[in-house]
Image 1 (cartoon, helix red, strand yellow):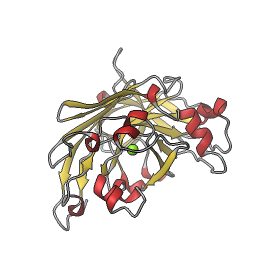
Image 2 (cartoon, rainbow, N blue to C red):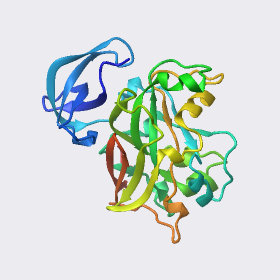
Image 3 (cartoon, rainbow, N blue to C red):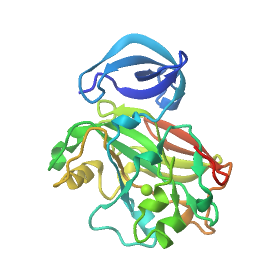
Image 4 (cartoon, helix red, strand yellow):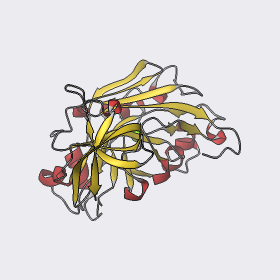
Amino acid sequence: MPAFSRLVRFLAKNGKVYYGDAILPQGVTDLAKTKAARVIKGDIFGKHEVTDAVEDVRLLLAPLAPEDVRTVRCLGLNYALHAQEAGLPLPKYPVLFFKPATSLSGPTDPIPVHPIAQEELGLDYECELVVVIGKTARDVPESEALNYVLGYAIGNDVSHRDWQVARGGGQWSLGKGFDGWAPYGPGIVTTEVIKDPQTLQISTRLNGQTVQSSNTADQIFSVKKTIAFLSRGHTLLPGDLIWTGTPSGVGMGRNPKLWMKDGDVVEVELEGVGIVTNKVEFLKEGARL
Ligand code: MG
């Protein structure tokens, strides 16, 4: 059991990067509002302590350090209305794909769009409940599955529909795996705080307008079911992320279609966790991140 309840990773005002247990004012749950945190020492997945040292937050970073992330698994079509808007049948088994670790980014980082993903319209948003695995799990029964979860974050599974489908070779990873196309955070709220992950409001706003609004209660495969299924014959490791699919309202499913463009601001929000806010930034040819 972790000693922290709201994990953030941040650049402090002193210029150093820390893991911390967020200090939030009474009644505030949005981790994006974290101004200070108690510094955590040790291994967040193992032996650690929350110290009395408090540091001021200059910038919240992706909640896991790159070296602490293992695999990024994602589910597709995990909300019935979203499967319907995509014109695809309800899946009998969870639809699994992977995003590269290099797609992960922080809760306020720009979403960089490479020139090859600018040439056709198709840039889309997907708000998703992100599960962070905290303990090695293999062949875990549904009834025990949540014991292997460290906590939950909110993420945006940024997607380019043309590269995902028509030019993706039958695999989704290319059109969803560009650098920086998996911003998540603002931190990780543990299972001590969020006891039931199937009761949370989840939404997206594009330039301030609500475009997705649902509840994790509508997931086809619950977090428990997903972990039980994915751990059958597959070892889940501490630091694995499972993105659990997006509800309806994506740009692809609209009439007319709604694609993100340069300069757009997209926010994804999960009740009890907070808001991740990113600006779309079209890169020039040859630009380096
Ligand atoms: Mg998705």
